[in-house]
Length: 295
Image (tube, rainbow, N blue to C red):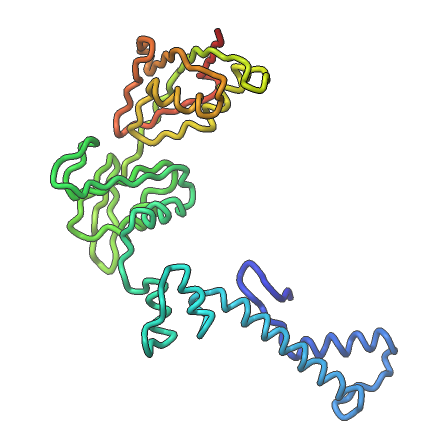
């Protein structure tokens, strides 16, 4: 059996195992006839050493558990609370303080919490949360008081289960995929937006020169690869001259973007004209579909 810090937690070595290991090691050193009965001098020493080692294992377990809010106590719990900018109230017990730290029994509705929960669903590769908390229809055509979860990958049911934990009844959801979930006999239908992937072909014309240190300009391939690394797109983002220029020129100070020409669905755009992407769509750019021309 393995002991110590394991993927399942901390497994403390018990006294019986420790004593058995000590006795086995002495048999190896002195032979099978060595006397180690509890009443013998050597047996007494074995017991003392086993007690000391057991205490060290118990101390190690306490240290390990002290970093877990659900197991920490006293001062260590107060140290962990500082991570959430919390302080123990007067006469507040460890159990009460622990509940405050972990938000036990409280709804968590911060946007970052919803995103984190969705991204933790197995198979999810993309997740964005959009909320319209105004009293008018927003630019994404979301009605007032609507939450939209745009997700790629993962199972519909698993995503809906996570959303249900955060979206209280009475709040509308927006999407193109509807999933029904049942908890304690109560059913709710939630909408999930599954963005439509839109491949975009892009041609970028640049003027590259030596930098202030005399170093040669990057190659077209390097410019293309840098663009792919720095261009972060979410659903509904148009491919615009400003966005492409910002990404390239921010990385390469000696490269000037002159024109871009993008197209989708075989529709050719004019120079520096945006490639329009609807809110339910997500533009995809890949290396084979990007051409960089240096003049």
